[in-house]
Image (cartoon, rainbow, N blue to C red; front, side, top):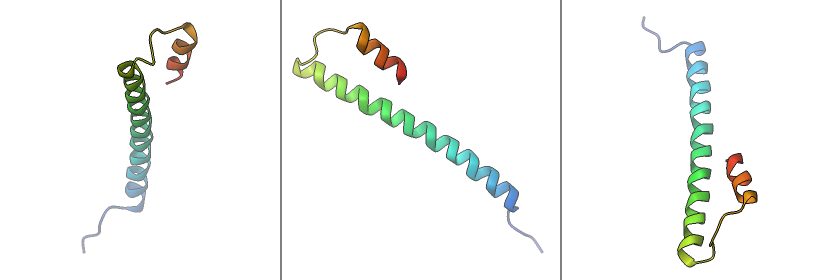
Length: 60
């Protein structure tokens, strides 16, 4: 009788999916912040970048 994947394999796959999900969340947050910044630039709100903004970007 054939059985499906073992519980151990399923747990490993779930862990891998969690890691991928966390990376995806980080990518989405980066995209959101980038889009916000581009909107500010397009509207003329943002004219230059100071070192404080660069430090914040390094946290992304």
